[in-house]
Image (cartoon, rainbow, N blue to C red):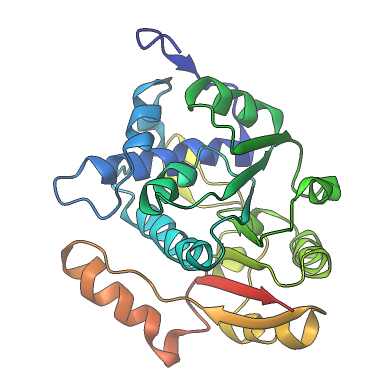
Length: 277
């Protein structure tokens, strides 16, 4: 890519456009002198895109960086035990997780499978470095044919960062169920918003006068998530992951403490790790 020519990202719309929102939040945090996430690739990508990021409003994005940090920690733990595993990144958007994990695990040989719609895949091809360990599939995560491309020999770790909440309940549950059936021994991580979001913001949450985050029709409470071991065949264990500590009093002390309280568990969002048996 010519560093003097920026890439137009204006073709993204709907849920796909949220890839730019989360990318911008991570890059903003990565530039901070006391960064909570080391993500130089996110900075590079943001600087290479021709897009009006100000339309999203507030840019701090610490919660977005913390989500990526929680996902990285779960992936790192799995890859430390399965260094040649295949990571499947569903609806990956403009995430830069591969490069963060590759830096954190320099001796690992994990392979990466990105699954997303064609406009996102094309942007990734233009913005991100190539690697022989990365394979991309331009299709919906709900087109289960991607499962045929997964090498299960050395383990499988599936990520659905910022995906399930935008699907219909039957689609999200169908995806979890199919993954559990197809990949015994694998792990899957996903995030969900508080259950009240779908009730109180059925048309989506406005982040600025010029942008509204798409509706999030799917979520589950902590109790419903824990019950997946009984309701979804193949789910062997459900782990409610902690909120990483951020920067500043609220994100370092208050938010993680709130996240960990039993009384608030069913009213907050969730970072959930599933083990398939």
